[in-house]
Each structure stands twice: as structure tokens, then as C-alpha cells.
Amino acid sequence: MTTAVADLDRTSPKIAGRVIHPLWVRLTHWINAVAVLVMIGSGWQIYDASPLFGFTFPRGIALGNWLAGALLWHFAAMWVLVVNGIVYLTLGIVTARFRRKLLPIRPREVAADLAAALALKLSHDDLAVYNAVQRLLYVGVILAGIVITLSGLSIWKPVQFQELTVLFGGYEAARYVHFFAMAAIVGFLIVHVALAIIVPKSLRAMVTGR
Ligand code: HEM
Ligand code: HEM
Image 1 (tube, rainbow, N blue to C red):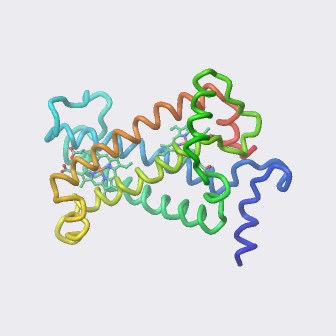
Image 2 (image 1 turned 30 degrees about the vertical axis):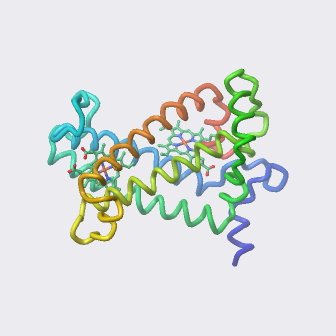
């Protein structure tokens, strides 16, 4: 069983005819990308109905037209996000992809790779191997995804998920956590999409697998 599952994820270029991202990674990645964009757009509209800070998001970039419409989008895409996320996390663990590609993360390597990246000297020759900065960012955004889901659950059903809401320090605090997790994901996305455009072969690999 373990071997069969591991076979799903022979990402080493030498083993599987240069497959860099197996089909399940590509499918869950792009389903997640659409769901996250819907969650961000509708979340901004929800925020505008009762802003936490002294600003609102322009209506042109918020989704759903008004609060009730945005809540419908938010809760519809939520199911896609959560089910797809569980599939990705489960396969990432059982195929050992996370252990092989995202770990370990050593601060010294992060510092060295970050310096190289800023000097535009970081190589992307082997797309099958993530550098330390990529590992850190991918693990970070996965954790932000877990935090935003748990804080989302605790502001959606604060009675049913009481313990969770208490864990975040109450309803109001969970709202702030939810907001800052969104900000972290948006920050990640700006860098992530810019890099995908700068290194187009990485984008091709996330579409075609090679
Ligand atoms: C990538 C995923 C997500 C993003 C980017 C996101 C973003 C946002 C944003 C920006 C807001 C407005 C914040 C506020 O003013 O309080 C919001 C509100 C909300 N979100 Fe999410 N969210 C995500 C996932 C979830 C999930 C998974 C759930 C439920 C399980 C959820 C439930 C809620 C609820 C109930 C509100 C309304 C909060 C309120 O009334 O203030 N969200 N979301
Ligand atoms: C919508 C535009 C997006 C584009 C164009 C894009 C593009 C890419 C590309 C090209 C890769 C492979 C890059 C590499 O070799 O390092 C990748 C991987 C990844 N992306 Fe995205 N992405 C997008 C959205 C997202 C979103 C919204 C998230 C999460 C919130 C995300 C999370 C990830 C993760 C975790 C990986 C590593 C996956 C793995 O190897 O298991 N991406 N993305």
C-alpha cells in the first residue's frame, strides 16, 4: 500500500521520465488557486460591511456585490478549499512528498538562498528540487491555510466550535487572526505569481507536469 501510494509521486526526474509535479499536485494546486482567489475577493466584501481597520477594499476588486452575496461565495468556495486542501495534505504526507520536497528547512540555507535570490544568482536548473526559500514559503502558506480555515470555522460557528474560538482568544480575536492570515496569503501570492512569471518554465511544469 505504502509503495503503491509512493509510486504516485515518483517526482525524481530520473525515475519517472522527468515528471516534476504529479497530476494530483497540479489538480489540487489549480483548484486551490481558484478557491483562494474567490475566498479573498468575497472576504474583502465581507470585511467592507464592517471594517476592522480604517480602510475598505475598493468595490471593483471585491466579489459578491454586497454582504449576503459575498457570504454565499465565501461559504460555497469554503467547501472546495477545505476538501481539496485535505486531499492535498493527505497525499502530501502519505506519498512523503512534503518530507522529500519541503523539508528540512535550515535557517542557514534560507539566508544563503535568499541572498543568492536577491543577487539574482539563484539557479532554477532543477525544477524538481525546491530551494530553501521556496520550502519556507510553501510550508508557511500551507500553515497559513490551516490557520485561516480554523479561525474561519470559529467565526462561522462560534457556538458549535466554542473550544476553537476560545483557543483564538474569542470571536473578535479570531476575526483579526483570520484577517492577518488573509494578508499573509495575499503577500505570498504577490511574490509567488511574480516568480512564476519570471521563471516561466516553472509555470509550464505546474501545468503539464514537466
Ligand atoms: C483562503 C481562505 C480564506 C480567505 C482568504 C478568507 C478571507 C476572509 C476575509 C478577508 C474576511 C473579512 C474579515 C473580517 O472583516 O472579519 C473573511 C470573513 C469571514 N470568513 Fe473567511 N477567508 C478564508 C477562509 C475561510 C474559511 C475556510 C471559513 C469557514 C470555515 C471562513 C469564514 C469566514 C467568516 C464566517 C467570515 C465573516 C467574519 C465576520 O463576520 O467578520 N473563511 N474571510
Ligand atoms: C493564481 C496564481 C498561481 C500561480 C500562477 C501559481 C504558480 C505556481 C507554480 C509555477 C508552482 C511551481 C513553482 C515552483 O517550481 O516552485 C507553484 C507551486 C506551489 N504553489 Fe502556486 N500558483 C498560484 C496560486 C497559488 C496559491 C493561491 C497558493 C496557496 C495559497 C499556491 C501554493 C503553492 C504551493 C504550496 C506550491 C508547491 C506545491 C508542491 O510542490 O506540492 N499557489 N505555484
